[in-house]
Image (cartoon, rainbow, N blue to C red; front, side, top):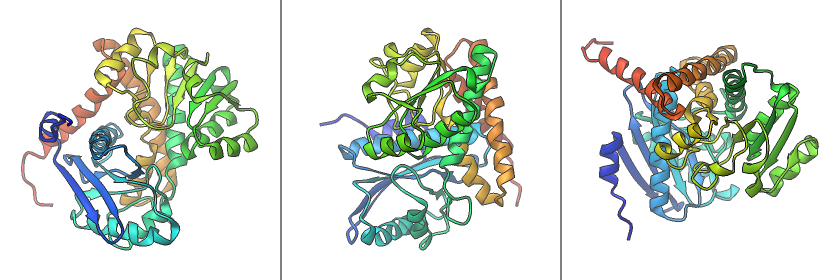
Length: 360
């Protein structure tokens, strides 16, 4: 029996709320976690995944929601952090409407403390069903839409910042890349890199359909086996799949000098593996900073969507990462820890100015 103690974990990392929900009619089972709402309502996507256990789903949701708090804070957004995970497989098309409308009703029941969006294994179409039952959903068709290209564009600017800091030259065409995961965001990132003349791109994926689609569109991309992607001799390793992939077994395999990608919670244990990358001389672009493009995009939907404003905000990821890299060097800490310092400072500043009551 597991010894994971959820209330101790919540107290340690200052979570506000954990909600389990179940709908008998559709079989919907899931968890919503709200980490922190100091800056505004918690926003985070809904992920559908066939977890090996309910505890694994809970731990993933807890970690993801905390990452969303830091992501929003570091990006300068007036949002808190939250996340929803749905346990199981995505429903068949005939069942999707009822399934996601049931989810929408649970989200509506949270009274606006949490706003959802698409995530792994969900789509804008799914969110349109959620929207039938609640207004607390973003990333809708006809509004900000699919966040994937914006997440990838933000990561593209983040890669340029890492190149600038490491090599004092951000020219994409001078360097080589290994992209782990070629789903929607990974493919968009590869396309941005190719547009700028990337010297060589290696890639991998566990989904043969993703591989076939990218091979057809970009035959110049070199595919390797998933277990070989870590040891490819490149300048930049870009993780664009699921989290926890940088650990005590994979970090020693890395031949890249920069890790900068799109996946969330890339470090299996940030207290151990952030410093390990630093000791190895690898510059790590903290995931919740470099992959904030999708969140920036949907946030603009809440304040009045204009694509040109989104592009301006995405470019700020470049300068934000340079600031974080400098903090890490000045304070002799990992870049992951420096990014948390950066994010927590903003949360604390806003908490302090809210200490006096003013009727809005």
